[in-house]
Length: 190
Image (cartoon, rainbow, N blue to C red; front, side, top):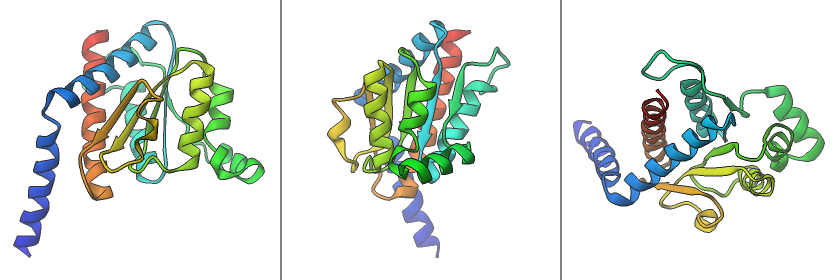
């Protein structure tokens, strides 16, 4: 049993150590800069994701809207994963692949940041949301994985392809990267 635990801890450590290079540092810094610029212009940050990534989207949005490490004014942030009536009615009437894009059409404005979280980048609803966001003129950040569909890496402002082979390991890195970004935003906006 302890061998299994040690192997998993070793994998986690390896994934986090992989983040400590110039490529990831630059991507994380660029993501926080986009968010800061957007908030300074009175725009908002809109998070989205499916499954565990939906929970991460809600979590990170709450860190910005509420507080992360400092008591400060709330930042304009929302997660479009948490309104079950919107999600289910849009999915029922238009198809699940439009569950996020329809909300983006109704809620987003030019200059807002759409922050998508996906381990695979294969979900049609996430892909459609990014496409709609680009048409509106939103800035886009994707928190994905090194094994994800990278077709969107050139279609977004920041594509953070986090290390990890398993979904749970990737999600552990996602929340850590998201927390780092939230901390940098608080530090830069004081």
